Image (cartoon, rainbow, N blue to C red):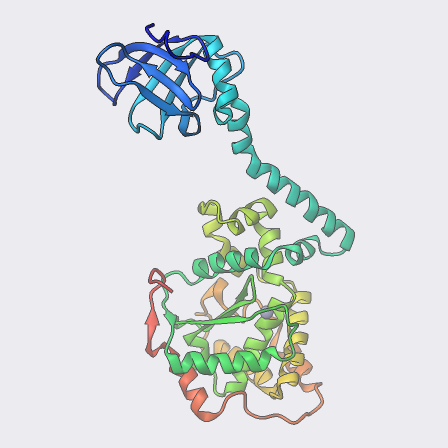
Length: 377
Ligand SMILES: [Zn+2]
């Protein structure tokens, strides 16, 4: 070619240049310049320079490649086919991102990271003995648990609007703060109410708790709501939701949800699964034990927890078997008699209502204002 005047760093190779999809290919010569691939399409044609950093190849360039097919961010839509093993080999050195190894690493890096985390977590679980799922849950970063909790909460409350009346939110925060006094400082509780007529309450990962309007409606006093809330906080403190999800869908899938990966069918059902599995009797007793401690630290009577439970179970029995199945809070919880005994065994301590009359009214009216799930938060 007629580039004898310039210092040509490498020999030129035959190339075909396509300016855009559908346009006719132009024959030319490609060479490896100082800053990029230089394309000479003959006299009268503009010289193209594609900088090395902006190069992409559809197929990674392997060590034994005999030609390359390139695109460039410098000239979107254009493509360049260059023939020659020498050209391909030299290009690999100048634009290492095009090599097969780089592509493989990009693809695998994520999995290396996951594997390393898995190995570390399994080791931690193994070292700490009894409950690997729980040990793993405790070893996870807070932000991951938070994300898992959000996904789970959205899955479980699908089709229901979140209640956000400001006075109600303020009352809910006062109640949550009061109950949090006796909780470990590293569990940041976050309580959400949904406009859902089903009487329900559940904890999801990351210290997030969902209460339904149905539950507030059926509560006859703030102490009853406080008792249920304290029980769910107990599950949160013990990381029962995290452990149940890890056991249910496996650690790999759980990590995927937490890392913001796929939201495939199995993962969308995380919430349903959590609801259906429920917790073991032992887990429920642990949560009740925490509930009593939290109520005591907050100076709230535990009778609300006991009363509510007894009353609602009796009510359900009176209404016959038209309860909502898997989602019923009371289905998955210890028998009323057992809980009543537990509450009854508590020594009396000075207590005041969980909320004053005004705040209680505000909390019961929290669904006067709602927000759909897809609206910005
Ligand atoms: Zn429970």
